[in-house]
Length: 162
Image (cartoon, rainbow, N blue to C red):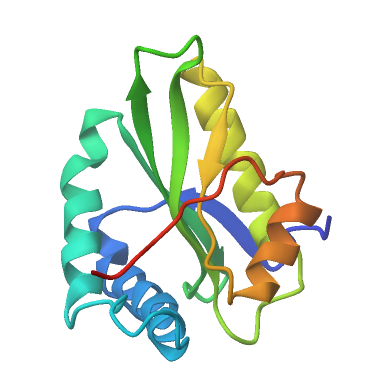
């Protein structure tokens, strides 16, 4: 894992809102670029809605908004996670990663590895021992990253248009 000499880890706040929206938009543009089934598309202005929802819930302790910031103040990677309650399972709750992205030009520097480590520590403080996420089958780079990061295929989510 690369050293964080040019960047620092941080939980993000309202003052980072515009940069959070920018990175979420980057993620959603990538999602919308995949052909998929022709129906799965992210709506316009979804990034703003998602950022505002997470920022609003931040004080609840049920969401995590964190990332790396360059010394110049640029948000370079972002992770949005939320606690999922599962009282019917022994694990009871998991940290579900909704979105994780590193800005173009900053990838392959180990930044997301640091963000993940931060999220694991955050989850452990909340007595959460499981982290889950979804990745689109077409996003080979993401699948490779998550597997390399110790995540294992766990279940298949099926989809059918009717």
